[in-house]
Length: 272
Image 1 (tube, helix red, strand yellow):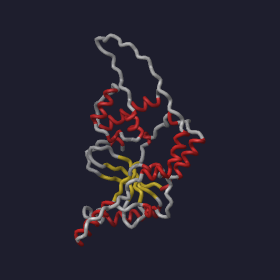
Image 2: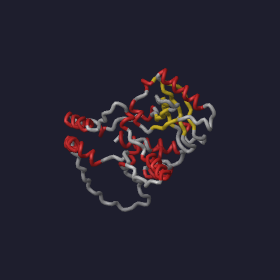
Image 3: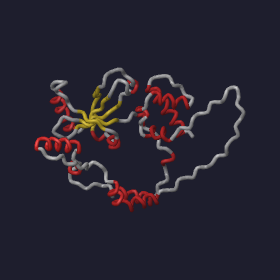
């Protein structure tokens, strides 16, 4: 499936099979999701077919495994289609990791948390817990819709347009007031950062006829892109510039460039 990268096919979604819901890891649902809905105006009968498929999947407690291509120039993605338990024939689409995408835990992320920092983190998290009976009850109203209907009302009734309060904006000051003590205790429980060791500067050697190639240092920005699986979102020029700075080949399709960048960063992180 990964070899289908940079396919020239149009955007599409293909279902390959079904699996029980118990095999869908909750961590996969933390990635960006897409909503899939039927469109009878484009495909007649699709709304009824998709709705019946959703009811059948809910009854059997399964999710669908498929391949999604958002546009011709991108890499196809392995996705899960999770039926929404509502009155429409909709599905949530979330990306699934490939087997080779499962990476090791960095040595720098292991072994520094103690009981004090864990307890401090729990107290901080407890301040962020929302207490409600139904999830829908905690969701704010759409400010754009409120503004639109307010505009229609002002035009039709000849009233002044009232300012719409946007409940979706975070009240940072209120959040800090509620959890400032826990934030400070959590910060104090963290270990101090290691002081960087100053290296002695080497004397410059006289230039030779053919200077030796020196790899560029891999920046934290590239490592963060690697950890967050964002390398596939970069342009070819960015990937080639990185590979050129590492003395790697810059030829090939975008999928080849991405795989080459991943190998370089993994070697830097795990083989040093």
